[in-house]
Amino acid sequence: MSLTENLSRIKERIAAAAERAGRNPEQITLVAVSKTKSADMVRQALAAGQLEFGENYLQEAAAKIALLAGACRWHCIGHIQSNKARLAAEIFDVVETIDRLKIARALERHLGAMDKIMPVYIQVNIGREPQKAGVMPEDAAALAREVAACAHLRLSGLMAIPPHTLEAEKSRGYFRGLRELAAELSHTLRLGDNLGLSMGMSGDFETAIEEGATLVRVGTAIFGGR
Ligand SMILES: *Cc1c(COP(=O)(O)O)cnc(C)c1O
Image 1 (tube, rainbow, N blue to C red):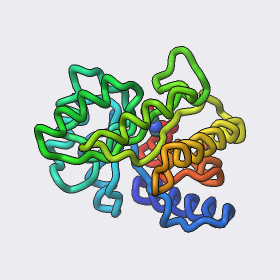
Image 2: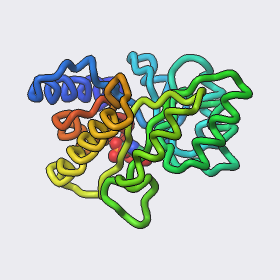
Image 3: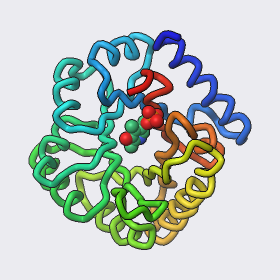
C-alpha cells in the first residue's frame, strides 16, 4: 500500500476507535513518526495532508526540519541530553519527553532567550522499566508543578511508552494508569484544562484511544518498517 493509503487507513481506524469509545475523532491528533525516514517521505505525507510529525534523534530531525522549514509541526519524542536542549528548543514545536527537572530548566532558559513558548508533555515511565526514560509516576506531580511554573513551557499533558508487547490489550492497563495519573495531577495542581495524553503507537493506538489518548504517535503503520 502507498503512504497515502496507509495514512487514510490509519485515520479511519482512529475515527472508528474514537466512535467505539463515544469520543469525537477531532480530539485526537495523529503524529506521524518519521524517524529514519527521508525528507521525501515526509513530503509525501505532507502532500496527503499530514501536518504533525515526530522525530527521536536531534541531528536527524534538524536536517529534515531545515529542508521542510515551516511546512509542518515537529514533535520531539526522543530523549534529550541537556547539552542538546538549545537545539531542541530551536527546532521543535512540541517537546513530549520532559522527564527531569534539569531538562525542563534548560529548555526554559533557551526558550526564554528566544522568546518562544513551547507546548510540552511530561514523559512518565508508566511500566517502571529500569532501562526506559520517563519520570516515575509518584514523582510526576513534583515535576509537573515545576514545569507549570516555567513561563515558556506550556504543560500540555503526559506521554508514555508502555512495556513492549505484541498484544495491544496488554497495554490497556498502562494507558488507563496514565489517564488516571493525568486526572489526579489536573486536580491536585488545579490545572484548569485537562492534561492531554500522548499514548499509543502502530501496534496499540486504538486501545490507547479507547482509554483516552488525545495524541497518538504512529510510525511503522504509515511509513513502513524501519
Ligand atoms: C518510534 C516511536 C514511535 C512509533 O512507533 P511505531 O511502532 O513505528 O508506530 C512512537 N513513539 C515513540 C516514542 C517512538 O520512539
